[in-house]
Amino acid sequence: MNILDRKKAIPKLIANPENFLIISGLAGPAKDIGFLTKESPNTFLFGGAMGGAIPTALGLALSRPKEKILCVSGDGDTLMSMGSLATIGIMKPKNLTVLCVDNSSYLETGGQKSHTGLGVDLEVVAKGSGFSLTKTIQNEKELLEGRELLLSNTKCPLFILLKVNQSNPPQYSRNWNASQEKDKFRKNLLK
Image (cartoon, rainbow, N blue to C red; front, side):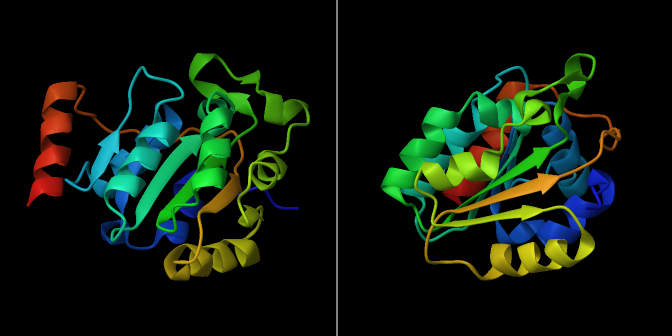
């Protein structure tokens, strides 16, 4: 088992972020996506609202069924959204992928072990919630398989568990003006 470096794995997995409307959870995933996309108009990054990314992505997927929606969430954010995973499993939006970047810790608050570091398997949770298509990625071969799934799936919601080491996400200067970010994303949706 090789656990991947998030700075290399996420760009390789997503390939072209312009293929998606992207909702990102806070902390590490927001840094991963913000750095990758330079906060492009097709991205909305959460900050300070743990657990909000998955339900927001579900609402976006239901309201924009012809567009591919990618939710990039961390293990802590996903653990707070398990009810939303169940709702996705029941509603089955075909255009939604949840990518959980799992470093098995709450890196943002000091590196305490998260539940996934103590044995909770979020792929099993997603399957139990009704996701018929799931994949855990721990090495380069699985990363390429996951990229193919992400790019080609149009049949059902997809849950990808990306196991990464505890290296820090990329650093960049983020726009913390939530109103500007919301307006940017909204304008992109309305064009």
